[in-house]
Image (tube, rainbow, N blue to C red; front, side, top):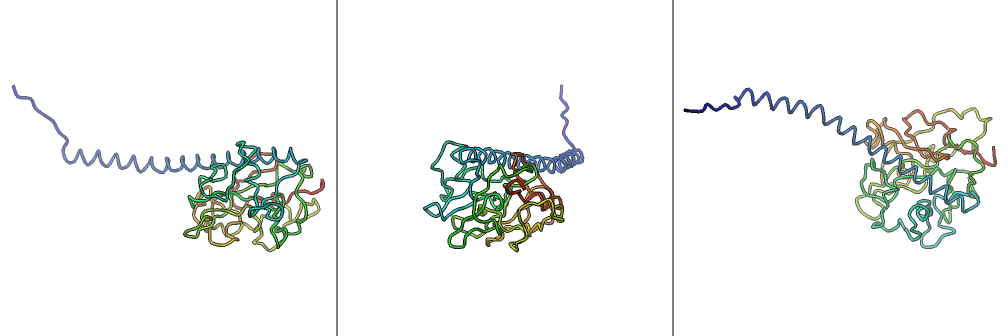
Length: 270
């Protein structure tokens, strides 16, 4: 007795292939969106951990936050906030982010456009000031002393740490790095100051900057809106930036939502 075998016809095979292609077309964007969401959440978790380190540091220094960067009072080329808080997060007081091999994922944004780099976040220079010899403090009239968190009465509203731009030169140890401080808010033209309730522009949207990575200090020390739709593309008009706030929470902020009062800390209880 002969057994009749069945097989796909060409038309049936093409139908199956078409269905598979359709399913792939539907699922791939969803998988990509899920992957980006996971990266966004990892970035927020990194910033929350950094907040724990900053508060732990301050608790040992009379509630004083570390400098964003300081090469006046520290040897060996200076040091930055990420180095100073690492000992409180990992028990590694010898961590040094000037060595490329000693990369710490805590300070790297998974959504960064340049996969290299040791530091992808920058500090608000009004809260974590910069002592840069021989220029002195950058970031406006900030000036001469470190910031005491007891001064701040609006901790849930003021940014401490945020996504920053990256260096994009083709080689060298700084490839992919951000500056320790975001001191090019308002494009480095001044105008940012300590908070006063009397100011009439507190609710004005900040100058958001070019949203770009690049080979200049301005690119690597400005906000980088690399999360959300289109944000990873350098120069994009869309996207969102992740902030760590003074009370320890972190959130994603779309363009047009960040106001002057979000980057102006209070001083001496003002």
